[in-house]
Amino acid sequence: MYIWMVIPTAIVIVAILLMAKVLQRTREQMLVQIRARDNAQEARHQEWKMQQEKRQQEWKEQQEERLYQLEERLMAQLQALREEVHTKEVQDNKRIDNLKSQYEAALSQVRMEYALAQLPRIEDTPLPGSLDSLQDNTDKKSYPLSLPGVDLSDRDLSHRYLSHANLQNARLTGANLFMTDFSGANLAGADLSNTNLSAANLTHADLHNANLEGANLLVADLNDANLSGANLRNARNLTKEQLKTAIIDSNGQLDCSHATSIPTLATSDRGNHS
Image (cartoon, rainbow, N blue to C red; front, side, top):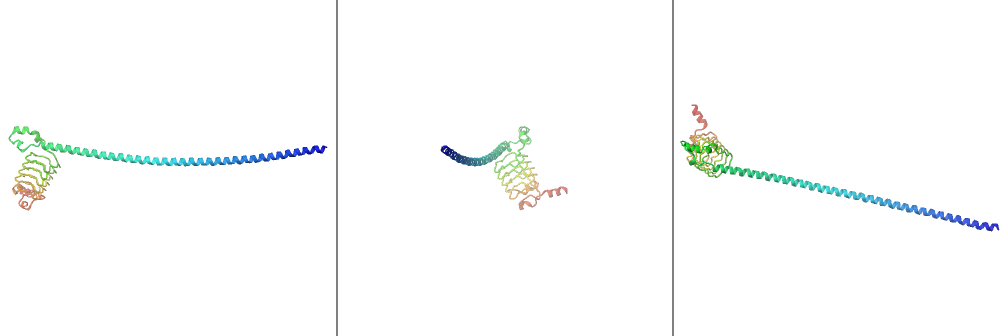
């Protein structure tokens, strides 16, 4: 009777132990699954994190590249703008210089035209014995014309009073200087080629190194005119009598017909010493 009571109890105990063991195994399996799931989630999280970091790094590199390209474009545009501004400044300075040169040239031209317009004519100049006329023209004679290096080519300056004028190195090619008064004028180095100097007054004028080639010197007064080094080749209507009253040195260029029997500075000096 006692045995039959123990057997069911033992069976129950065994069953309970088996169930406990099954539950323990089930719990261990669940723990393993949970750990595996947690590890998988951790791995996925780590992978997502790495991908995020990679994307962030790529985005950062892209932004840095874009920023670098933008900076390069801005620097190129800035350099182009600087060059454009510099070019415009250079062009503006050139325009200003050109305008300044044009203004100065125009002003010089106006002054020259005004000075030429104010030149008295020979017939208006006073006679040596006319005191009233001398007083009226004192201002005009007190300030002789001074236009060194000026270009007066092909100008009509006939009958003009240019006594003691400064026209050194001036260009007077082809000018009409008929009966012009150049007494005491500075015409050193001036180009008087092919000019009409007929009946001109060149007494005491400085014509050294001047070019008188082809000039018409019909009855021009060359008394004491300094023709040292002057070019008188092909000068028209030039007589030996005119040259005898002028000052000529061995450097003067004369035609063969005029070169003989013309006293030079050297011969004049020897004549004075003798």
